[in-house]
Amino acid sequence: MRRKVIAGNWKMHNDLKQSEDLIKSLKELLKDKSVNCDVIVCPPFTSLSEASKLVNGSIIKLGAQNMHFEDKGAFTGEVSASMLKSVGCEYVILGHSERRTIFDESDETINKKIKKALEQGLKPIFCIGETLEEREKEITKDVVMRQVEKGLEGISSEQMKKLIVAYEPVWAIGTGKTATPQQAQEVHEFIRGLISSKYGSDIAEDLVIQYGGSVKPDNASELLSQKDIDGALVGGACLKADLFMGIITNA
Ligand code: PEP
Image 1 (tube, rainbow, N blue to C red):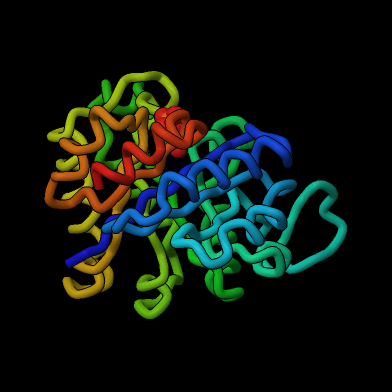
Image 2 (image 1 turned 135 degrees about the vertical axis):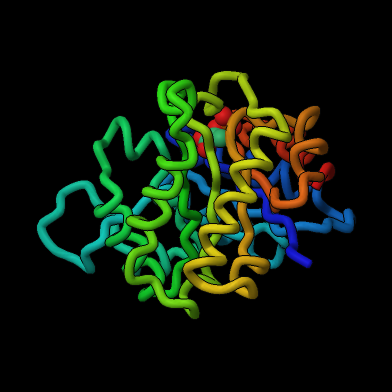
């Protein structure tokens, strides 16, 4: 039985004080609740260190939103996996569609980042998903297959056990348009099949595949009750503690 994982991607929102307030509010809402899923928050880099202190001792785990694939060097503006580890991160989001489209990250770059994250003991949340144009051309599965094959090239079975996949149709991110539970389930099942043929059914069955794209408390329950949907990667709704808590409760 896979445990559901709800992760909040804060993107470029919240300065230090706002980050502290949001984590404190979430902790308050989670207090004394029995929660049946893992909860991850991914604040901006500038808040990670303080966020790490605040989540310590709670069920909330910490993730970052990106990292570089090199260990160190002349890469102005970048942070390394070991830097993220040093401020208490356990997870890192890699391959988010905003990184792919706005910052031109290729499947090859994402693959290097996934390898480095795993080598350094970080658990990647590996994002994949098609654009609206690709869905309309009916090539969703080809796109997802390419992203999985290239993104996971050279990743061993042991490493796969540490990784989360997030299926995020790009047309559903931040748009208020959610994939229907059936549309999402179809792609999730396809992804699990891809992993099964590459790594075997045991690893595929244990793999957490999150859905992301305008998840809100009122649509979470139906999405999360699909057989192959094991959690959510949440953008907009994770910036308000009560909305994020609503999704956690539905999981
Ligand atoms: C995301 O950025 O990963 C995301 C799913 O955003 P939203 O929930 O706002 O669509």
